[in-house]
Image (cartoon, rainbow, N blue to C red):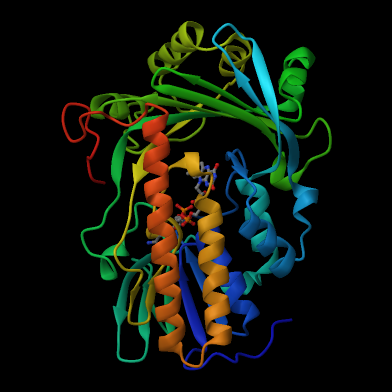
Amino acid sequence: MFAVSTVPDIESVGVVGGSLGGLFQAVALAELGLDVTVWERSAGRPDDRGAGIVLQPSVAWFLSTFCDVDPDRISVPVTHRQFFARDGRSHHTLMRQQMISWGAIYKSLRDRLDSARYHDGQSVTALTPRRDAVDIHVGDAVHSVHSVDLAIIADGSASRHRGLVAPDRAPHYAGYVAYRGVIDETDLPAELSAVFRDRFSFYDGEHTQFLCYFIPGDFGAVAPGSRRMNWVWYVRADAAGLDRITTDRDGTAYGLSLPPGLIAPQVHAELLDRARTLLPEPLRRLVEGTREPFAQAILDGRVGRMRQGRMLLTGDAAFVVRPHTAASAEKAAADAITLFTALQQLPSMDAALAAWEKNRLAEGTALYRHGIDLGQRLGLNDPTPTTATGAGRTL
Ligand SMILES: Cc1cc2nc3c(=O)[nH]c(=O)nc-3n(C[C@H](O)[C@H](O)[C@H](O)COP(=O)(O)OP(=O)(O)OC[C@H]3O[C@@H](n4cnc5c(N)ncnc54)[C@H](O)[C@@H]3O)c2cc1C
């Protein structure tokens, strides 16, 4: 049961996009007693073949405080970082972390939100700001308009509505891709599984990095045998290479990512060849043991503002930071916690939204820069952006 709203000037909130960024906001704002509605373009429960996420403090705090979920129960602990050399030897250092999955976070948030507040399969086609409200236009064929006091734009890195708040700020391709894979624990040979148990494993090669760790299985399952191995392999690719990688086996071009199960046979064969040539043996075996590798383009995106009147940008619709920061989900959770705190503590909506924007712009900008620095240190950044490799290409 949520409290009655105590927020000045706001009773209703519309959230555009019902992935993690939108859900963090929806759950936190509902907790303030606001009447929250989420519209999500995709229909149905999302597939939980999704990848792993390093559990960071804001996500953990959010889950335990707002979702009544103990994050330790839906995450996999690691005790050490393990660093491989090309010949397969490794050394390790003590570093305790918790690994969670996209699906485990998603389920915790969705379970907390009344299903009447979440409309999936419904695309937001436009937002129209008015004096003290925003009209949210939903659907094409069957069109409806909903007037809300505050609109949260959480429609991701390819945001359609970002320009209402931050014009000309589309993210651009950083010049490399992340191949990714998940393998059910039961499909891993026991001796290979033992190599990675309790470890966050890395291999840094020339212009490449591979990392892997165990994550929960379906929607947070952590019982032995139900977990999954999750790996990520950063590989440079020029614009033509990106297009090849993200064009599926039937010739359909996906642009910036390739979903599991669709990789073209030639691209898959090249991935396996590259693994045999470049990777230490245990990591090569992970790539070989993955039935449905998938891929995503690495993007850089920053905005100069996150608020326009009663419209806010959150999550990847605002800043797209490199995965090396392990902070994208964390940033989305912190966006929501900071807004919750500002609305709860500051005397007016304007003061709260202004303080929120200042805080989130500073943190987003710092993370954006940190991600680019990490890419540079790993030798992944393109030395000649906007030239032959296509780095710098805007979405
Ligand atoms: C493959 C992959 C791996 C990742 N791994 C990590 C990781 O290891 N660590 C980490 O911290 N982060 C990771 N991330 C990023 C992390 O998941 C996101 O940063 C976080 O979920 C916040 O995203 P978001 O909700 O802002 O955007 P998204 O997750 O992109 O969601 C946007 C949502 O908006 C919906 N939408 C778009 N347009 C409309 C519209 N017009 N109307 C209604 N709905 C719309 C989309 O369908 C989508 O559900 C990963 C992301 C991907 C794709």
